[in-house]
Length: 492
Image 1 (cartoon, rainbow, N blue to C red):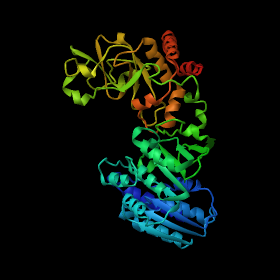
Image 2: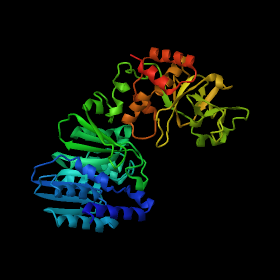
Image 3: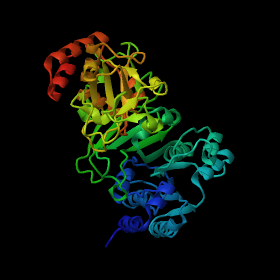
Image 4: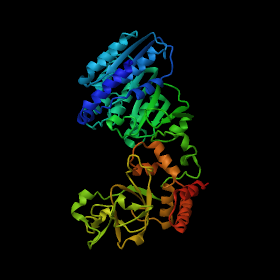
């Protein structure tokens, strides 16, 4: 006989199969599988408090509240009663959610209420007029959808001091604000909130009000929500409202089976680096011990070494009338990610199925760089690619041209929109292609984009060390990954 959470999970699968992708996208709705829900509920520490006030915002069919209540039934908490507030805007799910809560009420001393209105509006009203309960526990799989800058949601959030760009971060920030001191919140979130300027106000808001107790990272992008084809890298967080920050437990598993679950404790200084104004949240794992950013050999900024990095300035569709085939006279090379092969650049290339030259004229010249040595990094990697940071060297002898165009899906290391010394360009490419650098990038970036801002934030060896690596690389010819890693690892 199926348990209550298993019955809820069957309903979740049935609804997921018959719900259109458009409807899910409109609501940012991805219902939580039972194994994930159980794990999230397991992160709450046991408690001997008398009564629990639980918030489930974006409750769906009741998977997360059900996992929490299952744990109550199993004696995982010492509560004598539980009060559940389940917020769900999708009216089609209400009958299933109400039934799930009623089934638990038959076996537990609990009360429940279903809030069918918009959670952001409901929470803002509660905060402004103090007309609702404060919560001891919250468990969330919030919706994933962008909030426009002038939208009603954005204006409501600003009324309570919350500035953010996505529903998921808005739900978590509001839930934090609705918690009692000492209240505990578990949420599953896209990892994209961990870095980047758009989510910095959200990180500041949460880190100022909570202590981070646990971070769990799924190693596979597409397995935790495989039925909904979700490709965002996900992280589960446990936060304590008003807690004193201490060490953070960081755990990993490949997917929602948790068969290879592993956990380690880390000092908070490894999660959010002291003095980091961006408040980037790193997720260290066992295989990233001794990572580059903690070595004294890697302590220099790009400014220190006299280098800049910019997104490739050529947006091809905006210059469509000036695009040319590489064989046409009067054009200059236009480099795309497809031209980067094995740490070098191949142009022209049969892999690039579009015009890969640009007419040189008064319209295009402002988007071009003089031919020279540059280190370039692709901005995008595929979802399960082995590496995120992939660097190549542009060498001027490869082109019979005075200028080069760098397409918008490349990041270009340069100096004042001019080339770099050859040894420096080659040394940068060696460093950027090292495994420890890729590991470092993955620790603070949950998306597959490698943005210029991310590359600026990283630390680098000294200019002299990079120049020496460049000379070494030129003498080696083709480099294997092991050679790169040993060379970068030898820096002191």
